[in-house]
Amino acid sequence: DQQVKQNSPSLSVQEGRISILNCDYTNSMFDYFLWYKKYPAEGPTFLISISSIKDKNEDGRFTVFLNKSAKHLSLHIVPSQPGDSAVYFCAASAWLGNQFYFGTGTSLTVIP
Amino acid sequence: DVKVTQSSRYLVKRTGEKVFLECVQDMDHENMFWYRQDPGLGLRLIYFSYDVKMKEKGDIPEGYSVSREKKERFSLILESASTNQTSMYLCASSLGGGPGRYQPQHFGDGTRLSIL
Image 1: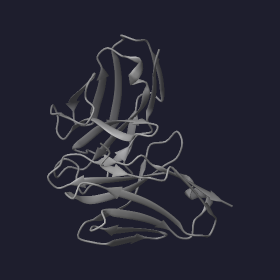
Image 2 (image 1 turned 180 degrees about the horizontal axis):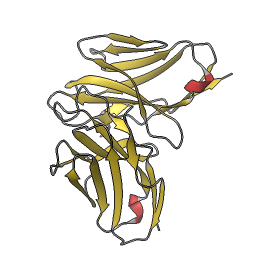
Image 3 (image 1 turned 90 degrees about the vertical axis):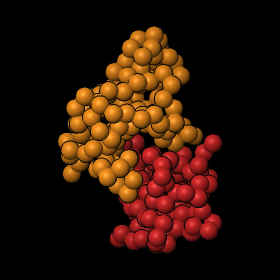
Image 4 (image 1 turned 180 degrees about the vertical axis):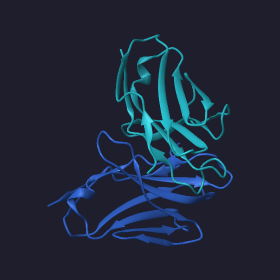
């Protein structure tokens, strides 16, 4: 059963606007969350992370929000750029666990 | 920058063959992982290792084995390849301090394996 879900397989956004990518999880033991970006024919690259003691983490144009009560996290990209077009994966890990669980990915297209 | 190198980008093998996928990292990372990526299923963990000669099963270890004889190298072995093992295989590494938690994983570019 998928413990980390990305319910939107794809998203299209105009250049300069905000992109919001969503991720839901079911395991309340998860306490560390990451976002990865993947271009075709390349491996995923780490983008940003957040631990459960925070509800927001920013890095330049990228902000991750965590809502523990809703078991939901989101990635905001502002402003979106054509180079942001890629597949984005969220991942989660638990303190007592021993692996990361990945979502199925959301393909973002930023239209110039 | 961390470099995770997978020996082949594309590989075609036949059913029943024993297949070796090699992964090398150059940053002295303790932890190494093998995933497969399939459409609609995301990345699924096959095996991981957080020390030389040690391994742990992930979610889908059946039909696979691994070897970690040196810290920098982690090999995935398909004992007898089958068509349902056709997939993209991704290797990753991360710093230690446990089984990779609180440390992001760094990925190789993947091996697209086709079993005919």
